[in-house]
Image 1: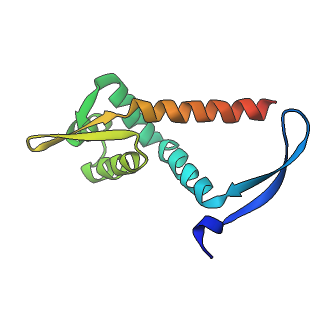
Image 2 (image 1 turned 135 degrees about the vertical axis):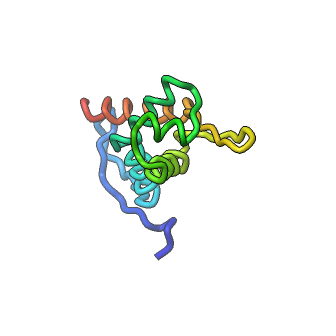
Length: 120
């Protein structure tokens, strides 16, 4: 089965009360779920909070402050980087991590919209 065809139809009620067919693309749902899962972890949330406080940090500064192994910090930073929540810049031998505030804003807006629709 092709990924682009991996969707199904559901019936939805629009704001004006009419029924409409809505397609759900499960590949896109899976991608969104992975993005949300990436920030739904206590250690990754701690990394985000640290970066909010300090602007930019190296992996060494992060693992020392969080009292975790370097490999653990690196693995969690990689997850945040793949989900585009952190950006990296190289300065000499060091790689500095910073928050991607635009990405955080996108996710916050998405979550607010989902919760708003859920409350209706």
